[in-house]
Amino acid sequence: MKSLVAYFSYSGNTKRAAEQIAKAVGADLFPIEPAAAYPASYNECLTRARDEESISRRPQMKVQLTQAQLETYDTIFIGYPIWWYNAPMIIYSFAESLDFSNKRIIPFAVSGGSGISGSDTALKKICKGAKVQKGTMLNGYSAADIRNWALAAIK
Image (cartoon, rainbow, N blue to C red; front, side):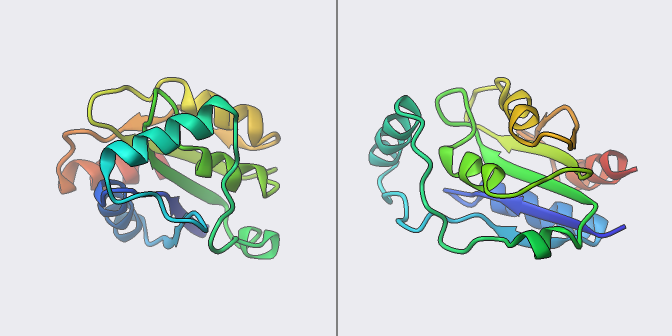
């Protein structure tokens, strides 16, 4: 079984968690990046994120994972921060661009204070034919906690 950790990270927190997950389960990493980077200013970034969500805008991705590449994986961890009680719209760009049929998807998120907020349920609706597990917030998880969670999640 081959696994992929696809993630979007604004501040580096999701990236660190993704790297720890990949190391724990021997997965490949795929950074989900917008073609137009989010502003460095956190407030400007949140304004853009709120604007994207309000009109359901799907930002273009810098690099797209191909369907042929996706087919080499059985399990895909998808990681993101929670913005405005949702996954960033770039996650929807990623999820809607591929056919995840017969894949297992394991969502994880980090946030300054919000919960997973149903973003895992939204992924289930988009990724028809995939087995989408209940998402997990990794706030406050140590590297050991992330490792243990990832190993349990992939079983």
